[in-house]
Amino acid sequence: MNQPENEPQVAYDMDPVLMAVLSNRLNAIVREMSNTLLRTARSAVLAVVRDFSCSIVTADNQLLCPGEGLPVHIFGSALQSQSMCDTHKDLAPGDAFLHNDPYMGNTHPADHMIMCPVFVDGVHLFTTCAKAHQADCGNSIPSTYHAYARDIYEEGALIFPCVRVQKDYKDVDDIIRMCRRRIRVPEQWYGDYLATVGAARIGERRLAELTQRYGIDTIRQFVRDWFAYSEKRMEEAIRKLPAGRLENVTVYDPLPPVLPDGLPIKVAIDIDPAAGRIEVDLSDNPDNLDFGLNESVACATSNALCGVFNCLDPDVPHNEGSFRRLSVKLRQGCVTGIPEFPHSCSMATTNIGDRIVNATQAAFAGIGDGHGLAEGAVGMGAGAAVISGKDWRIGGSPYINQEWLVVNGGPATPETDGWLNYGLPVAAGLMYRGSVEVDESKYPMLFKSLRVVAGGGGAGRFRGAPGAEVVYGPRRDPMTVVVSCDGQVNAPQGVRGGHDGPPAATFKVKPDGQEEKLPGVVECRLAPGEWVRGVDAGGGGYGSPLERDPARVLKDVLERWETVERARDVYGVVFSGSAEDESLAVDSAATTARRAELTAAPA
View 1 (cartoon, one colour):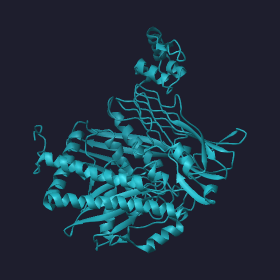
View 2 (cartoon, rainbow, N blue to C red):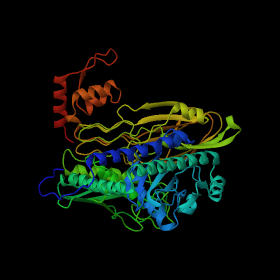
View 3 (tube, one colour):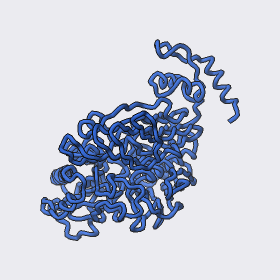
View 4 (cartoon, one colour):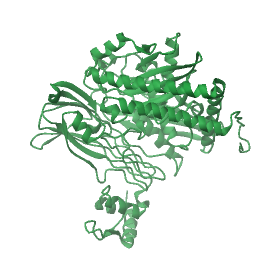
């Protein structure tokens, strides 16, 4: 393997072809785990939306294969497997552990992780991990998110600090009964639990088969060499960056009365290309607050790492090897750090977490043109609300589920427009969008409309993607809708002259059509005939809109992602003809004049 002069030499004992084969085989195993969970889960948040992630961790608790898991779920998997090893010295084949404790390495209580230690010839080699966001986790309100929870007691979720839930491949009935008693729809939870255990067991079986085929020594050599290769790739990526310190601030929306003025989130990044290292410092932020948005260690670390990976070579593997070149500085008792018990981490995976991803990736834009990203749309608006009520179609039985019909415009990059179906920064576009038809069939609700918002993205040389508007309500009986939406006041920021994305908004629509603007975080009860209308935020733009290729602006208008008015007033692009008769075209001379006019205008 040829390496540049003055680069540290890394020796690989394993044949590179075999290393590639085994790496892809591990990815295939994680994909099979994911497909198992997707096809057997019961709740729509798992079976439709795919709000879950699977991974493989080594026996000494290093993330080996994250598959296509959500970064916020997966990057901290080894923290949870470490808890399993620390709390259970008698690991055995057939064990499975349920872990959702944010103080012991989990993300937040709504994410139930199932871990199965994998033994081959009596040797613990791996741990398979399957993490699934629950439709209900026993919170004191009908939602897996509780922004106003002053502590974990008010939050109310069932917490399992890495407990054995299966022994000898059989359920520990005591744990199952606890969940059935406190979960609002116990059969739905149990179906999801079985799907999650099944995914972890599939991984266990396939890893045992793989190891038996190649032998324990070969597999161990692969792990060592794969981590070394991954570390080398990360080192090379960092060496291409200039040395220096980057700082950035993003502001979380006001949350009365806890945050009357919002919450600035500061990120500092030290890049040392000579040493091939990057450190992200999240310690210069306020202490834990009496609300449910405090970051767990897993979330704070994962979200900072996600922001860094977004700005580097996308082919750098995401595992313990590449992590060795990155560090995240946290502070005990900090809202973006190490939470002090009993502060709630109910929403650690999202709101402030999204801000950390955004602030980190946008900071890299300070290096210069061609680096970093804009901020992606934040806000779990009405399209991502948790809905609940009683379903007359099944005898008035309760239902609860998280919707996932947000679009949330993706951030612009130095080379591309934002991704339309972005979702959230912490999920990196890896969750599936929900289905109107499936939701209407599974739950007693009706959708009135779902559409992309024209002009709903931040303008730029490359534009942020637009958000969407969704309107829905109950078919017959009242429905409770819990919305936890950031980005209604402080919209996603553009970078390097790119414009900010438009903010999110939520409204309650009365039977007479009158609208009531709702706060970002709200528990709203809808009576029959009432609707909730949510508008997503749009992603921030990258670079000046006046530098955007006019042909791209024309296409945006024809696709109804942009308007003729914004094309002229923001992008400086003038058209001739009409979209109605398909004669719309760029007027080059008028466009040149208009852009000169906008350039000369005072800021």
